Image 1 (cartoon, rainbow, N blue to C red):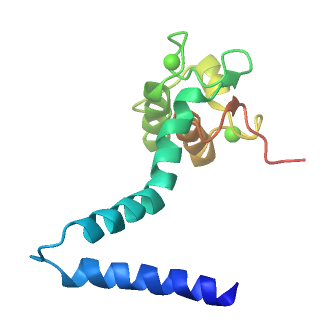
Image 2 (cartoon, rainbow, N blue to C red):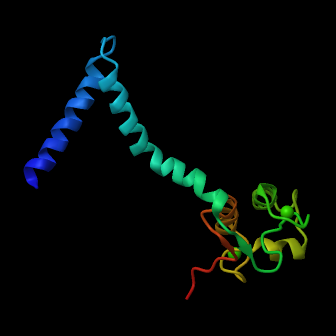
Length: 135
Ligand SMILES: [Ca+2]
Ligand SMILES: [Ca+2]
């Protein structure tokens, strides 16, 4: 097992060496395969984050998260809450909107946690609103 693992590391290391040392080299095949494995390694997380959202089923209790009260949830709701948090006097929200904006630990009012939760819901990191971190 160990020699095999070591061989894999050596192969990987030499591939990296090839990559870094062969700018202008004539053999493109080894570089090609190295780039492929690097792409896969670094792309799994990125792709996972990007691909997962399209297949995620998101749910909301009542009209939770619809801060701008247009009947649906999107990034503009997070924006509306952001504007309110930045300057409540200049960008007031109705009591109903504030209730819908309280998506994180409902009942504790609106703060940056609610805003972040809206962003996470939009990005499919959170799949259900509201969110509670209290037991
Ligand atoms: Ca909305
Ligand atoms: Ca809250």
